[in-house]
Image 1 (cartoon, rainbow, N blue to C red):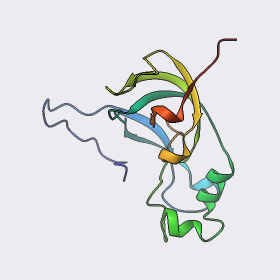
Image 2 (cartoon, rainbow, N blue to C red):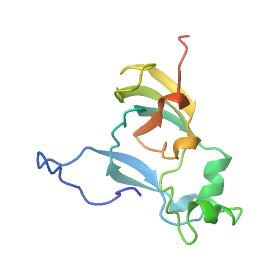
Image 3 (cartoon, rainbow, N blue to C red):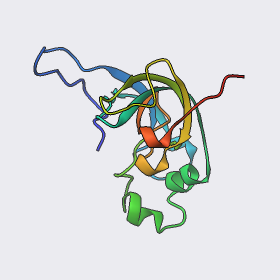
Amino acid sequence: MLALHASIPDVAGHRKRPRMKAIVYETYGPPEVLHLQDVLKPSPKDNEVLVRVHAASVNAADWRLLRADPFLVRFHAGFLKPTKFQILGADIAGRVEAVGRNVGRFRPGDEVFGDVFASGLGRFAEYKCARESELVLKLNS
């Protein structure tokens, strides 16, 4: 579950953890239920890549989850309200900001893209962590 509200102090240094902007939804419905909110910036795990999102697309999965249509979506995402996903977005393009210690294919500064639906949604935000295996390098044009 995402911590979507108040600042959380860092226990070790008594500093606030880094924040970012994200488009979130807390109820099913039309696009009007989406709103911009401050959320905690994620940190990559050992096998993950932190990507600064430059572009994210809206696809059919996002639309279905937002509207809970078909109704069976609720059995996966939350029956009365979305609990599994509060930030939508599966398709991503951006620049690697940081990598976990077990990541070997990418380094900070690499431009990447991918479909990261399998590791969870959340690409309608400034930053997102994704598994190394879900991303590929953008080719130079």
